[in-house]
Length: 329
Image (cartoon, rainbow, N blue to C red):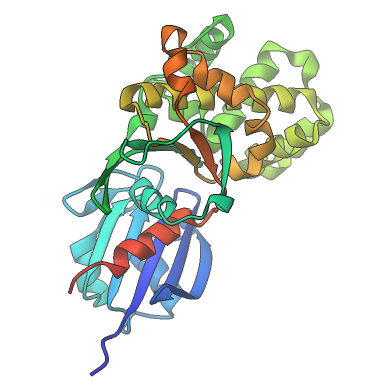
């Protein structure tokens, strides 16, 4: 009797969920869903499958949030996901639930070099640990070590560490953000919502830079305002948007450098997430690298740390599918 090898994989973020059916490494179907429009992961799976999944042998879901005892309370979604409950409710033989950056890290291990862009060119030590950081709806971080031919991923909530200003402007930014939030983490600033927060901060501190046309546009698009800010910044047609994205990239590089100092990732730092590929020209202009390296006496150490951008937006989905394929029944 032939064993069913079809697996279900998903990369679950606060904004969107990418779900796919995969069979022996071959993509059968892939769809993208707005996460917040669903009351639960179960309802999203049933929409994708057209009903309860009855022909799947294994599933792996990478989800944005801490996974403890096979359960996750999503950080930016009102979902509580339990792997054992999913098995029971959806009649799935085996479900693995991992942090989204765990899945992303595994996906990176199989990406070709053509799907990576270099921000800091330095030799990579294959024996050393490496780190992943990525901004999207939130800010994810993970640490990866190699054990023989396999990888061990240490998931992290490092994006929620306290924001540390580097100069007077960033001290003013912290004061501004504390007027809105009880606590200010790097995720508050280095994320999609954070980009809009940076825009608002710079608009209030430099009102002469604001364009009435751009202001009206951002008010009209609501939750899409961060994408519009990036678009204007990359086009270079609005000075306030340009300064906003430049500040965002500098903060991104600074936190990547903080992560590198804590991990000493001789294997490299990988910048992933949904935003990085979309703003690649700004990441490549040197601002990210300058902030990454600006660590005083530790600069020579970071100069020897390779930094690359993950260009494939489906790296997390690829990793989830790879994890699912290795699950034993």
